[in-house]
Image (cartoon, rainbow, N blue to C red; front, side, top):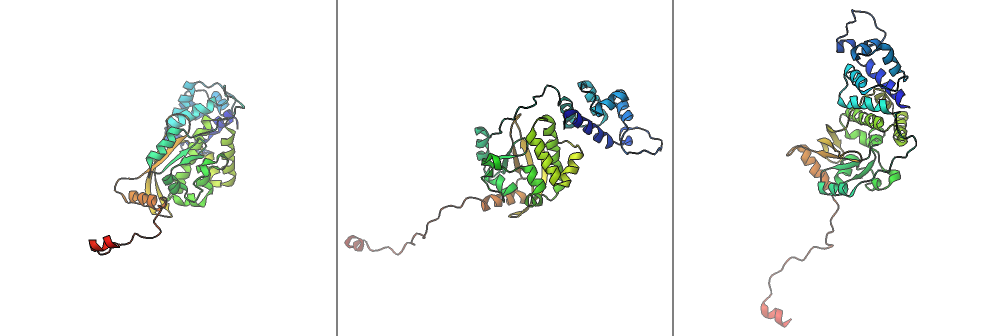
Length: 306
């Protein structure tokens, strides 16, 4: 879908979700065909003409200024992430390369060292399409213990967290409030799609998920945008039971991000993570037979004459 079409869809959807009472628009009890704002009402709130706003929704105006976009964002009551997403959509068809293939995503040596240092703190390295590029032992055990631990090393068969959340029964069962996790995944994919409108692999992933999951298709059509930064999730792990983790995304600009899961000090959840780390630790080599127990000491003279 072209950028202007995506911009129009975003504006129409968010306008339909904004009720007149939310923004102080009086309806005087009139019957309305749709619950959301009308185009002319939104245009009035944004301080632009109704005809101009209509052209913008219909993809007929490709030169909306940043000031106009900010005014529309305020009228739609968008938060900061959604405002930036609106700007990304408006810029999608301007000065963007058409055929350039995205560079392969790789894990830097510094990130690998970070995974090692984190030790028993579950950590996963994700690419922008939510492909798992690497994980430490605890991250694999917590998020996808049923998946081959070496899978991220093979570019053609890397697990994808969005695909796992929507299409994998094991991953779905990990989250007590699965819809909350699912909406977070969709909101982040929406954000990335706006930032990378020419990423064919990303659009193919969205198409696959939309065709295989009606829930994904419904959430995607909602046009909600939300970066995955910090969120608490109650998990139900098959090995250690219930635990609550804080999933945090560590990002240092463009490129892969590190997602870590932490727990409160001294909590049952911390104990569960510790137990999970112990249960999935590599087995140590043990002697085939125990050392003989020390017997009674022999007289010195007997030892010398034997």
